[in-house]
Length: 283
Length: 234
Image (cartoon, rainbow over all chains, first blue to last red; front, side):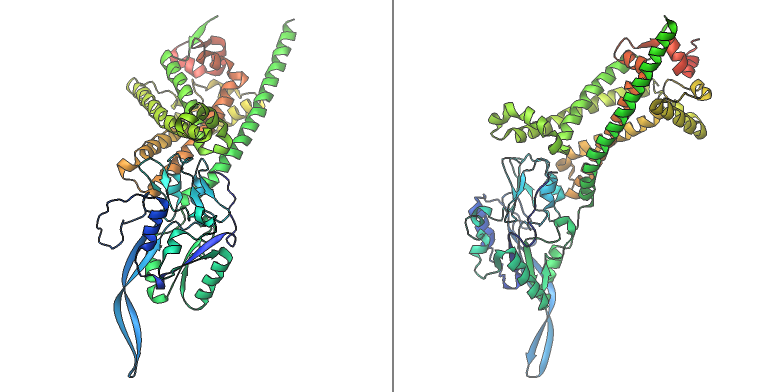
């Protein structure tokens, strides 16, 4: 656990992911692999169109597909007709770039950097492969590569710092992603929420800093995808306890050592005085 | 001057190896627990290898201490298993004998020993006469140590083999927390143990552990009368 300065939620950049615009073409997934030089992996069919079945060291962005029964309403000359149908919602997913990234706090060697833009980036050369980031991440994002090091989305920080948008954002044919200053993106997400759309990423637990930099917005009808995808996301209590235990050990241990040292010296002094008294008595 | 053996050669060998391995494990583990405090160690260890590993000294050091921590952990575990089996098979465990005393007497003993060691108050005669080879505080400290060792060893082995065992991130994180708790408990034990053995009243014990294993009979009569009585030494 290394102390890191996290930019405020409204500092840096963010992305608004409008799922109602997503057609599941996976151009973002391919662009991510292309820009970051990630190699291709043979995948297996797991009963879903998502391929691979989860993020991996070679796949930093994956489009997931969720199906559910939804109710549609149509206005006809005879009046409003409601009918149910199966909807399939694609959900492009990568590192959420938490405002106070628990992975960065958990990394024992400070290999996970948080840039001024708010990008949470693993420095490959500094990673020792301990897996603490994977254990601390509530979104199950960092993944171990064949070289024993951990990999995940970098927010294309190299592009951002050169005035460009992330590769996945640039390539999207339907403008699913709105990339920009975090302040503007948050305002846009809030205005969508005010319109009755479902938003994920703004009012989250303090474990992730209260919000993330990849904010999802969708119509209520298609919100089941976001709800299903993030239903298991919760703070890692064990990691929270670890973060309390560390300062407690350092400061508590120092205090205990100090007290015992003082008591030890006092005992030695008493012992010396007694020895001198005994020696004086003998003389 | 009459001398009585209070520390056997087997005890000394086990203690010295424990001392060496535990110190190395503590230092290497502490580097992962708090790199802010132990970064100097990672730097010192990693500097000669950083060029070879193609990374900065601290990262190289952290890699090396992490790898050696795992290896030395297994060596320590093997030593502890062998020593524990020896103690159990030959029924040499005496350290829990004070726990057989009634609880009220244990509380009296704890109060008397604590005041004696910490504030130099004289030991009440009835407590002094009931002292065995190990006092009741040592018994309870041993329970802390055994708890710490169990936590450290079980969680440590499970973490090393977490992929083989198919443990998920939540279980692995819980194991990591238990490993940290074991580490904290072991540090608590070490702090109290160091205080006790470096206390001037226990100087003969320290000399016995790092000397010939014997202590003066006169000192033993004052500090371990029940132990002498059990051994039939007058």
